[in-house]
Length: 364
Ligand SMILES: Cc1cc2nc3c(=O)[nH]c(=O)nc-3n(C[C@H](O)[C@H](O)[C@H](O)COP(=O)(O)OP(=O)(O)OC[C@H]3O[C@@H](n4cnc5c(N)ncnc54)[C@H](O)[C@@H]3O)c2cc1C
Image (cartoon, rainbow, N blue to C red):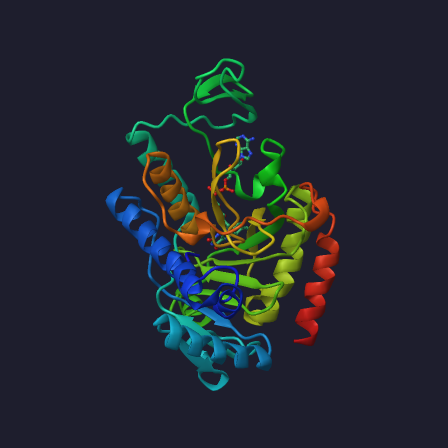
């Protein structure tokens, strides 16, 4: 899903940063989608990119009331058109009785992320980049630290050492001990997905007539869409731990139950694939880009919005490395960690946070 907005809602952005910065932050998400669209076009990446729009679905009546406030804010203060759809008219968007209305944003898009990633890798190679898969960076040190005037970094990897004039850290949810300053600022959260067998065209049309990107309004949200070959792809934050074979298997069961809650008509449809990965959250729910005190560049922390935002911020970081000045607030806002050194990269508080957010979902 290539979505407008950041993980934090526009209401929260305005309350925290004021209207001017909130607008700049929201605009970044729009520019990011435009950027992805342009790269895909310029590089001829066949990844089924489509401006199909998204719909956020209200899990509770109170959530729909919040949508109305959000829509007003987006239209009046951000000049960004969105459309509210009440429960009575929701069948034009989704064949499900579960939800209490929706908020449609036509600017969002969808793509096939594996095809996009491969297309980007091929474009980078065409531009002269050399890619080393399955090669872990184990250490980054200032080159010749003792001798004055030495430039760049010595980068030790699982397959050898290389010298780099500049280093960009792009490890997002997988940020480890390599750069402890960044590790203390990124919270890894597991997210999981199932994909059904392809369904017939008639059923696909009823499940999601406009083939939109869909997600609901819970903190423990479900997100779902149709693939190009009419599978229902259904994801959610079913577990807080990084994905392994067991968590993927367990999450697949939880997600199948969730999918049937939304679409009971899929009871006889087989789930053919399940997978998971790690999202990179930050303490202020914003992505951050910049340069560490050690001179390492970074762009990380999109909380599930990184397909567009980290593509775009990656390009901004590259421009900065090439000497351009980047005015985006995501480069200048403070990048918070937990107070009093309470977080060193081991997210011990996630089960507590999980209980808190489940409680909020229950009472909202
Ligand atoms: C299940 C799931 C669903 C998602 N759905 C969406 C969605 O619909 N829309 C959206 O916008 N985003 C979504 N995301 C988030 C999105 O995948 C990320 O924001 C995006 O992939 C970030 O791109 P990236 O290149 O910055 O980092 P990543 O794609 O996470 O890549 C980071 C890479 O760094 C590597 N790495 C880490 N440490 C080292 C090291 N020491 N040495 C070498 N390499 C290292 C890792 O192996 C990894 O390959 C989803 C994520 C998951 C897990």
